[in-house]
Image (cartoon, rainbow, N blue to C red; front, side):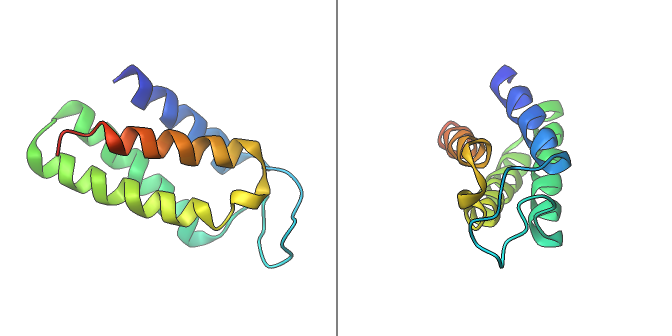
Amino acid sequence: MKNLYNLLAVLTIIISISCGGDSDPSLNCITFDAKAISDLQLFEELAKTYSDDPSAVNCAALKTANQTAISSLERFSSCGDEVTKTIDELKVSLSVLPC
């Protein structure tokens, strides 16, 4: 669970600060977009829910939210190392979910 809390802290930071310069002008590396923010917030919410109640239903919901957050963030992978690191951490957290 400690790794999950660390990941949530990183996600919160990424949501609230710039991730660097835009290499793709169609991407906004400072604010991302509404979908990416919504996906990350849902993941964070479900991670907390799963932490409080690690049921199969909550695990499945967290797994889906994790996959969605990865997909959303991958569009912004050119924004810098912090985004890439967060994507990698999300993939690790997905791989250790027991469901």
